[in-house]
Amino acid sequence: MKDRFYITTPIYYVNAAPHIGHAYTTIVADVMARFHHINGEETYFLTGTDEHGDKIVEAAEKAGETPQAYTDRISQLFRELWPKLNIGNNDFIRTTEPRHKKVVQEILQKIKDKDDIYFSEYEGRYCFGCERFITERELVEGKCPDHQVEPTIIKESNYFFRMSKYQDWLIEHIQKNPDFIRPERYKNEVLSFLKEPLEDLCISRPKTRLTWGIDLPFNNQYVTYVWFDALINYLSGLGYPDGELYKKFWPVAQHLIAKDILKPHGIYWPCMLKSAGIEPFQHLNVHGYWKFNEGKMSKSLGNVVKPLDMADLYGLDAFRYFLLREMVFGLDAEFSESALVGRINADLANDIGNLASRSLSMANKFFKGEIAGPGPMRELDQGLKRDALELINQYVTFMEKISFHKALIAVWELINKLNKYIDTTAPWVLAKSDPEYLKTVIYVLLEIQKIISVLVWPFMPAAAEKLQASLGLERIGRDLKIQDIAQWGRFSPIKIMTHAPHLFPRVEQKLTETGDAKKDKISIEAEEKSKITYQEFAKLDLRVGTVKEAEAVPKSKKLIKLKVDIGEERTVLAGILNHYNPQDLIGRQVILVANLEPATLMGIESQGMVLAAEDETGIHALMPDKPTKPGSKVK
Ligand code: MSP
Image (tube, rainbow, N blue to C red; front, side):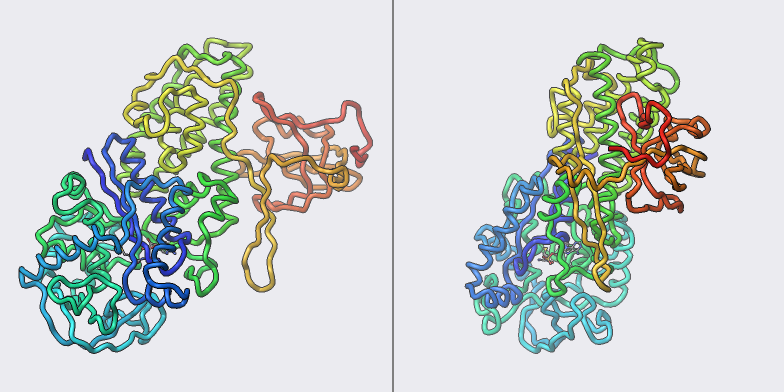
């Protein structure tokens, strides 16, 4: 393990407002920085905006503003968004700042002095979207595959960087450092590109064509080409060449990008560094693309997902969790609100949310706020302790290997084991039969949740801190390190808060199909809503029913399939298998919501819902106290 960590995001173009793609990269960088922080490392996290070039001038013209006024305004949108997404960047760099321009000129001069920059006439295919010349073999049906436009042929005299000189060195460096570009598919993509001879890189534009750039120090009739300007932010942001930050953090630099800008980062950037006599970065971490309705998200297609809308609607932590859990780092993923709602209800409200509220309300009820320590530990409890301590190692390995979804899956396996542990040990029964062992069960539940709260903190800082406060931890959030919780029992006795936390409300979704567009329109309501009117209540058709048949649904852990007589026969699924033996239900009466839209679960259509109450002792179906005629209305 290193003791320092430096992470960068791409600096985003200011030709459009931030969308979910920018938010994803920046949230991943934040999760990484937070993880390395609680792993005991000193961290530095840089993001910013890329403000020069043709694209920006064009966008400013469209907006009727000067490039400076326009870039000031859009850059501010990015700067202000990040705190709202709980992003803890240490600095925000703009390429129009003097501190950046100075470093770009210094590096240009250094490379020029080394004779790695020359002047020449060139004719090539230029893609304004990519802001670079592209080669013939990159074209798909004559167009740039990323921007779907035919490149423009440009012939002019310009300055070139002798990139070809570094091709062999780069191939060797990548082969010697297998994690230099990761995941592996992107390393292979770069290596396959490097099989063909590299062309030198055009790094300038004549001022007759573009003025919105950084002057070349050796010819002020030219400005530098956009990538040569932009990539250097990773150094200027640290105060290269003499800054303390540069000395401390450059040796551990890691970049985070999506696959769209792999070539400039995987090829141009290491060659530029090599030529300037600067050590290469440690890792280039490359992720896939978020798609929407199986297509690319783009402003012109009007399908841009706005990150703040999502965070406002569903909760910031839930949104952050979803992005990191849903996308396998390196592969593309489809953004869908219904998948987001599904994860909120299953993973958050149900799994971690229920675990916290059930165990803390039992702890309060049985121990009035203080748990001295475990009673006797049985094999079951020892096993969970081992699993929890083992999870810490697994988690650290996954996080270091940028396998965020795997880290989360591992944490959730333990969360689910703990939920099962509550069901099998039934603390509400132990309260009467075995109070000493009850101490153990509650202690194990809380001690392991301390570990869980720390491991989920990088992803969901606010919810994790709420849980940590409920668990009575004196140090929370940034102040609580992985090493602390790796020592079992370090924070005993456990003093818990008097109320159980409510971490994630359930979210309801109604999916309506609009025309032929398969776009789901979702309206959501938080579970804890305000009062309803009598008319709203009267819409519910509640009926008494007699259970005629009951059997467990094959392969389901929770569901019982009931045939219920409410004057007519209804098939109903009820998630009560952990609490009732199906045979015992036959002949008993239940209350059914009879006008609920049918829903299909495990291939069975459920035509209603059985009403039940839940407390820490389990689920209790509501039943009339005297035999009642099937089909009677409940008022
Ligand atoms: N300005 C350059 C980067 C210079 S870095 C020295 C640039 N800017 S950009 O605004 O186009 O940002 C591209 C980056 O935004 C991607 O690499 C990725 O980090 C993020 N994303 C933009 N759209 C995305 C998706 N649909 N999905 C995932 N991330 C994407 O390129």
